Length: 465
Image 1 (cartoon, rainbow, N blue to C red):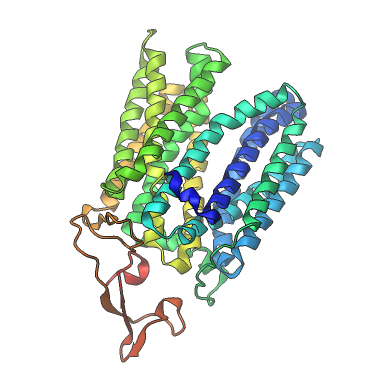
Image 2: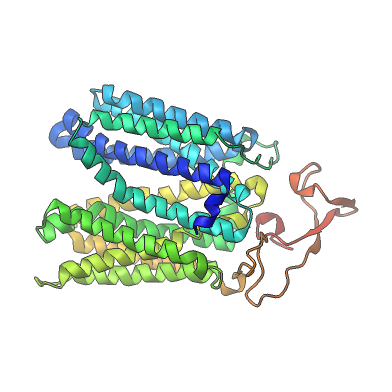
């Protein structure tokens, strides 16, 4: 897996991702302490509102950025987003009003909503080989999981030496280091998309692609299933640890660590698995495993006092992490194959926006329903929603659409089917594309439109090919 780090450009981009994630983790801890200083006992409400603002920024800003990202130099956009995040983090220790926190959080998360889809869309161009890109996705998943474990520990260590305001300095340094690493490499230019059309239509281009293709419609449902599981773990882990089992704060770290360990284990083994097993089977298998995990946590929640319940919860949390990683890790491969290069940033922006829209639904459901009706009802509701989403994903992504990368790991778009018959170029015509469209670069004009040949793409331009 680490062989992809031999590529200098990817190595610098991955390092940029790691230091930015570490800075974000420090800011999360510092923000909690800042909220308590400002609002006292109302800190939970402040943080809950800040989380909602974060999700709103992700849902609405990412598609808008995706509409115009193709016209801007990638490096300029990424560095600008990092510098914006650094400037906001620099201002956070100076605030003394709740509304100021909300404004700065919106600016910070808007910059993140601009950075992440553009960053994700650049990686397939930096690592065009399917096998290398798959390994990069696994490394990215590992980086997210390790950050969730490492950043709180680092913050705790630093807090023994300095006040929490200095944690924001670490955040600033992380974003500045990320910007410097991005500046140090030359990024491939994005493929330009069509320049005509209203801004609203461009912003919705990625979402339209998701709604047209069976595998991406299925991904929408899979996002919802993952959001149900991650919301239960994120919101209610502390309730289980402190309220149900009466354990110490250290046990909360253990529970979250089990979730991260399950995710990391799957991320480590998936590159080899995906060379032999189609993405569809892995991702839908993850959705099925989520349903099994919800049954398990339901049994733990409903069970009477017993020594088995706490170990069972830890195992269930690990299964949740593994199942979420089975769905999330191959997601980039799916989008890469489905979106033409000119629409890739818009497609990643749509995934970023739509997946966070699911969390915007499930976070309040996990918290408010659990507080009002009890954990059992929250588990039942989220479990039923996850099971329904998984069933919808299976129905929306038929087995006939299942495709598998070739054993050689070539950059085939889409790749060879499971029986490993050779992929051939298919000659076909386009009747509804305007002259000058990027996809017609090598096409010749015929009476009925434009004619050319290539490996057929699984996108909306080739729905009838």
